[in-house]
Length: 110
Length: 116
Image 1 (spheres, rainbow over the protein chains, first blue to last red):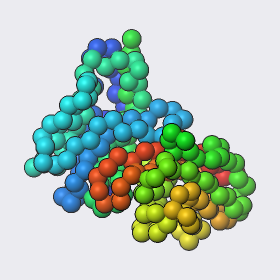
Image 2: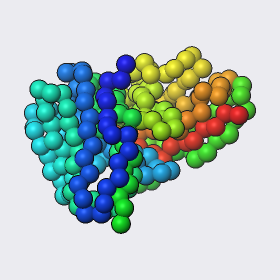
Image 3: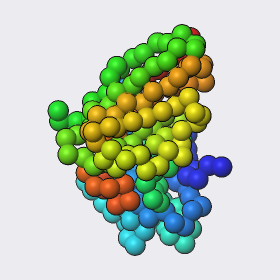
Image 4: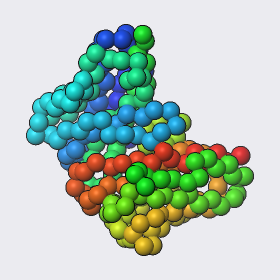
């Protein structure tokens, strides 16, 4: 049973474009929704996070949109750059453990 | 150190061997987590420590997996009688506050275990 479903599996975006990654969840007990960025050979690093009482959070070029009624949240990367090429994971938390999606590999072409 | 440190970075084990993976969390961090990341997948939770107490081990896949954090800082994940399906990257993460509070978890670079 996959508690957090992430799509797409891979994404190619032109430099300067908008990257959009989507996640859906079932467990309404989740109360913390972070996005992690992972480069090859590195551990995941927190990018941005949101709590369910907020519908949107923006940090620089990164924005989380959260739809509590639909149980969906998404990551938007504005003005995507080649340095953003990495694997992105959404996650959700209820209690102690983060539950991760399967990841999206983003390639930003120059 | 400035971040979470894991050793070794790479480990090749013959099937049936025992392995021990080490995690040095960020100094002062109360919470410590172990995750397993299979190739092309997201990390999956294994176990959680609050200081030296192992409060959640629900993700450990079998009784061959054992974790400890005896002094509330360094942690070791031990896998006995390794099997090929144990091949994965093992990630350690730590956070300042107890795990039920939504604070940032900092991940190490992981140990890539290959069982041959």
